Length: 91
Image (tube, rainbow, N blue to C red; front, side, top):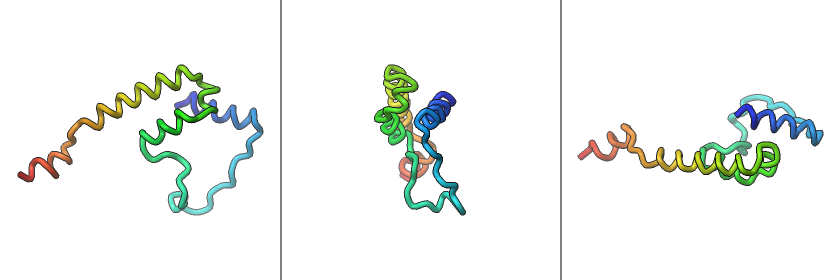
């Protein structure tokens, strides 16, 4: 996480990217989200990020995404207590 943050800062400095204007009011009221809202979309965004590949390395990004996709697959196969209560316990 820290490496990604520092890479982003360095990218902004190296390319003289001006920060956006500050958000006035409630940022949650924005109509267009700027960041992915779930892990699967975040991994897809990371996979296609030339900036992160440049600063963190393609090998690291590929291994990280592979590991996180495997974790996500295992997570999605678990039956939570809520799902059990909603769907299985009802019968």
